[in-house]
Every structure is written in C-alpha cells, then in structure tokens.
Length: 153
Image (cartoon, rainbow, N blue to C red; front, side, top):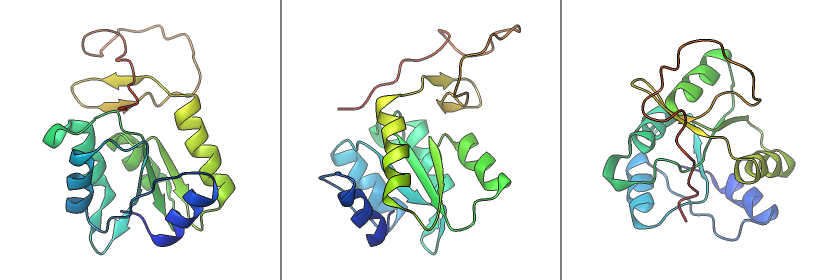
C-alpha cells in the first residue's frame, strides 16, 4: 500500500521494481505471488490500517515470507504509532514527507545491516535493539536465541 510519490522516490534511489497496491487484500495477493525485497505501507489510509497488514505478514498468513522487511510511513509519527508499528513487527517508521535520502538510508540499513529476528509467544519480527548489549536475565524467546533472518529471495 504505497503511493505514487513513494514509488517515484524508490525509482530515484535505484529501486528497479516497485509495485503499487491500494489495499491490504491486494498486498497480500501480490506477496503470495512473488517475494518482495521491501514492503512500504502507509499507517492509516481509507483502505485500512497498516498494523493489520504488518501483523498478517509476521504471522506468515497465506504462506507469505514472514521475514519480508516492512517500512511504515505516516504523516503524523507519534510515540504511540512508533510503539504500535514496532510491536506489530515493522522494521522502520518514516515520517512524511519522504525524501530520497530518507528512503535510501532506511532501505540501506534494512538490506545491508539486517537485524536478527526474534520469535516469542507475543512477538515475531526484527530485533528492536539496534546495538548489542549484555543482557543479564532469563531468555524468554522460543527455540533458539534468535531466528536467522532470510531475505526471501
């Protein structure tokens, strides 16, 4: 669920194939047909809330790659939106208006410095921590310490 302006900016920073869809339903159908390198979605639109889309991708609904990088955009980035997007499993949140440099920086960070994914009873998504720190508590994650990220290609 991306606008034409975002698609144009993606082309400007070198993205060759950007597909624009208008609804969560269309995004899910497209994601089932082919893997996406990065999914951009707008947080609130008249077609729905990106929280639902991010949650469905992270749950692996319809045999979709759960590791697909997701960038949420919004014209009003608030602390509650940041927390909700992060809790749903989004990689990044960008405030509008978007610039080519913002997109280049975030997509570069996602693809060139991928974060490990965390799987627990309540969360599946990229590790929220951006730097390694020593944790001195019980490991409550499922299975191994961290699931390895896959590019889905």
